[in-house]
Image (cartoon, rainbow, N blue to C red; front, side, top):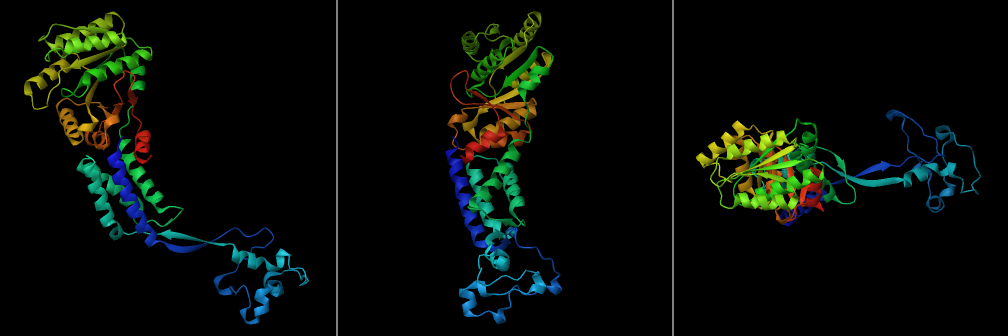
Length: 383
């Protein structure tokens, strides 16, 4: 999953990591003084050398115990030269040896021009929409430019963390907890599923029904796709397998009437949730879009969920934006995420539509529906 995106981002982190390595400079950070060495505070004008270098001989260097310290500066008690193990006499030597050489870097915009351009191209090649790629690169630039930072063991860690933060912020901007919503909403909760044909919409409805049923809710399905041949029977097969009720009319019937009847049945039988299937359609099909608007007008949904394939990349992003304009969606489900090598659709859809991703389809089974978690998603990219 996301192998191509992982490869491209790995190349970027290594490239910029090398550049940071070249820009880094050494700095001295003294460790805490030994407990046995008194801390002396002097102003800049009063600072004196720690050692009178004019009086230190070669023998003194070889045998440091012979070096002396001014008692007026440090008020150190006189100690016999034959006791070199006394730490107080040579505290300044220990202090000098305790200096740890570290490195730090500071980058300006010019340093990042070429690497960020490469990053943006890598994101675009991973089916991330242009506006989203620009937002991510801008976030990385803001985090790295002008800030002075110490370098740890690996410079690529710094770049990776900046990328993690940028991706997480893009994907977590519109998080919505469907479970909490359903728990607190007035029953029955009506959810309409929309999208084009062949993206796994009907299967996603069955997975969602199974998930809610396992949580203890009673679920009713509305077979509102009366347009596609076999769609009603397909939904019925899924419903029988997961053990939920289907309200259906004949093929070619009015989908708005089917959904209305499902709502009335749910109310009469005190069902908790109604999941309405609709005919797959492109936003350009005016007749079917008007039909969808009629369904939503007669039986106003609490939520409208857009379903598309993660592997569709930018096409899925474009379709989500267009459906959102026609019938404002409340969130998305991305199917076939487990087969997605790029990850672009998942990163882009929430940002483009301003609506959250709710679930990811991760396989063919009814339990293969994963609640969307931005942190988990970003971790998969950098694992």
